[in-house]
Image (cartoon, rainbow, N blue to C red; front, top):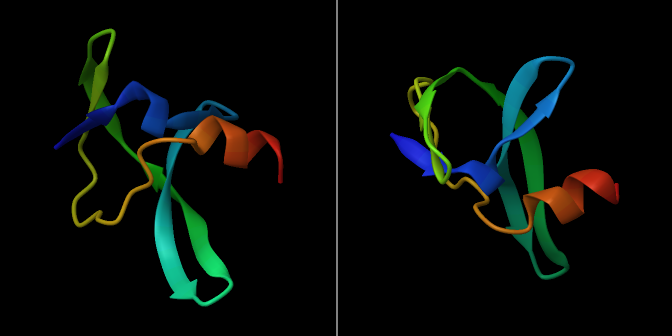
Length: 67
């Protein structure tokens, strides 16, 4: 599996994605999930972690930096 580079963020030398946790009438909540990354190019990064779904692809930088 690979994801757009903008979907992955780094904290303290570890890589994370935001995964949808729940959806209510008030909005959607996400949880931070650590992932193991592999090869990458300028646009995509390989994700070696299995069983990841409902990953936020766009807007990650805004959510992570405005908590």
